[in-house]
Length: 447
Ligand code: FES
Ligand SMILES: [Fe+2]
Image (cartoon, rainbow, N blue to C red; front, side, top):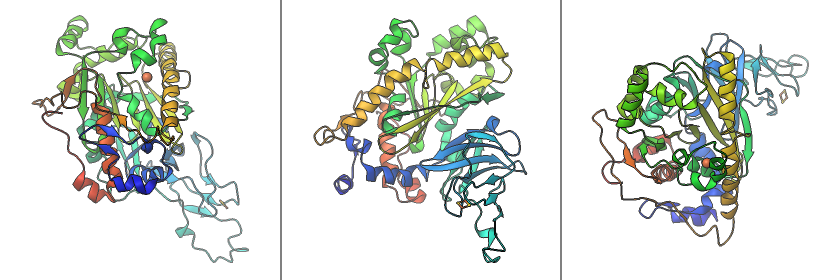
């Protein structure tokens, strides 16, 4: 199957918007993704607030490589591969915590916070002092960088700088959370697994076509309104390397109305999610950071490949691949450090009812993603392409004087098309150099 797919040289046809559905289940393609996409990209690892002190660590993933983000004694954040140099055992099993060193539970090799190998039991008696400890520290990510408190790492030393990688669209995605100022991640990342390919879960975050159908029961019980679930004003922003933002856009008139009612002031309460998102966006601080278009984008940013920031920037989700047919979702909730404990509890409870393992919406979604993935395995069903052509050729990229080019439209599949197109470019590139030379620039004109 692999040869046939690769011989086609095109899993996604940019002209027709048709997609080879086998990209959701082919095991060989999955291995290529780990190498060509996850190992090459800048991956979100954790937020600064999760590891504030020396010795604080947080365990995460780059593709299927398990990593430990740890603040070392010099206050530098290290991203270490969680695999002992002796036989490969993991040296850190807890999700997060504080430690003085990483001690391997198998034979007792012990590593410092920066990955240096400190001690080998039996170094003199068994190894006869004949092993160079300096060669056998923990492996490290090739580069670690931080944008506004968000720690990213890449396994590829040829990757461009994090800022260049993110570009203005990726940065805007993170700014949607960071503009609030002093924020922190609520302890206890919510995790659950769905039997779906990771790309189906990414595809869905741009999908404003499904809510009215998939989440009909949520509307029935009043958790969301028809306007929330099927907003007609859509704004799409496409950036280099596959970053994109898709979803509702606030019109200038609507935003002026909010400013008129509430002024340019930070909201006084976090109880009301609408207040927390829309009113905060009317502040001078938000306008300055997000820009004249960004401040009206209420859509879902995805930092390619798999880091989704939710509407209003209150939560973020990593879609971590666990084989071609399974994805683990990690939910990070961000709060303003200054909100009182009761409001914080109420806020966390509110967002957990929407997404995450207890989230009403994600339970609907997960089932559809799993069944869509399952059908991509079939001989006949897998061979029929998926249709990603909604609205193709009917919209226009608006060049804003601020440089924030965007598309104003109705419900659409621009975000998904951009994701698959970029995915294909990443898969075909054999190095960062070729990806930088051959990737699509942000589109202009008719789209
Ligand atoms: S595997 Fe870690 S000490 Fe042997
Ligand atoms: Fe959904």
